[in-house]
View 1 (cartoon, rainbow over the protein chains, first blue to last red):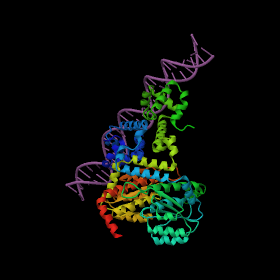
View 2 (cartoon, rainbow over the protein chains, first blue to last red):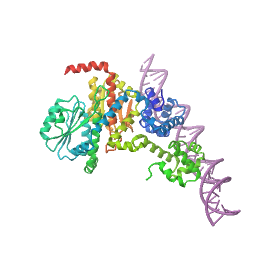
View 3 (cartoon, protein in one colour):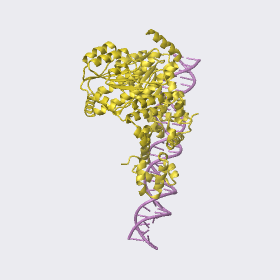
View 4 (cartoon, rainbow over the protein chains, first blue to last red):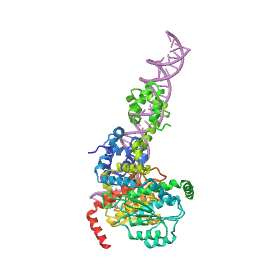
Length: 274
Length: 274
DNA sequence: GGAACGCTGTACCGTATGTTACGTATTTTG
DNA sequence: CAAAATACGTAACATACGGTACAGCGTTCC
């Protein structure tokens, strides 16, 4: 049963030629607004010619473009009048995608429920106000999170380093670490021995440790100054790092805000370098 | 402070003559849909003549009817894209631990709303059933997402490669790419020239491209077989890749399920290697 | 390697749309 | 009550919008 035009499109998008598929994708991307504009504007947005747009709506079963627009407007009217029906569209609600999404959303709410404003502010302060250097490191699956955070922090602050590669390489960086430095560690099950060893050594040198881990807490929590425990359970063969990812983004935002005065100048300088 | 056209109307409706007031009332009655139709339809709905409609929009301060319609569309776009601002009820405002979190959750719901189960299944099939190789690449901030996905896929499939480092290094890998291969690309604003060039070259070699981008669509969408448009707007100095991250995790799960038969054996083999 | 097919864009056309001028009706004011 | 001003609709107009024919191009299949 196909009830909305969006469903109709995703149902037939597989059978469409390249040009019309581009049209379909741009329409879906910000649905349904592009479809309410003129053919010329639609075609420009999609990067195709006008006739391709018309062929596209014809393939969807509409006699002409105005009829297609009317259908979109009717759909929009129904949505606007009863916001209740505006929830998930039925196709994705029934599918395997939705349990995954729901679980992920739950994970995030739970994660933030156990994370106070003050905690976040403290961690942001630790990352923003430090006089030394910031190091970031992650495990097998969480290393990308460390990279993501490093990519942002390195722009607004000097001395931000992501530790990559083999264990022996990090170990040598220990020599640069001291009391004024911060080590951000990502470690979820199954916790990696090498990371634990490294965190312990850093701790012994007085490095402040910020730990991103799962709800069962990596052993690194023993040495950590701040611990962020994210929910990771989802109906999948793998654990989800999405909640930790969102916490990371939130922290990036908080640190940025904190450094706005200095950071703004820094960012201007960076722009000038390009 | 007047922010929406509806406010503007109710502000000036007192000073309007009878006919224009009827126009205003019918527009407010089912706002903003009547305003998106043609002048003739609008006038018929209001029971007045076309010029009255035009005088009405002129009184609101618009130069012409299209300008008025554009304003309505922009307003609608803003509403549809951030459901949070639409339901500005105090209850959710109180429960909102962090605006950042709320925006992120909205982004995810919105992203999945535009993503049908079939689309996801198609992309999972593309990634799982390919006879060739899989390459993943990302931009400045999204490269970690490519890494994250690669880290998982490489476990359940052979020939999964993350493209890292300098542009010249990827370029040389093009020689290994052909029709049976898949290139997963992450590219959000500001879109990277180097990535676009690379995707185009890969496309010319017949490589199937799966694109993760934002709602404004990277130019790479022109060459992509599949496009995933995630919402990225959050109250922060940075865009959020969290929605794309969740889609990536969902796809990883779907591909894994699809390869369960083969993959299970493969994972057993891997376990034995340790 | 050649031929048939299908897809896409350019150029053009008819028309519906927004717009304006003008005459009539209606209200307002002295 | 008269006269003027304002409001409204009819009708004509110009623009730009949707629609179509056609040719070039790439792709696929013998």
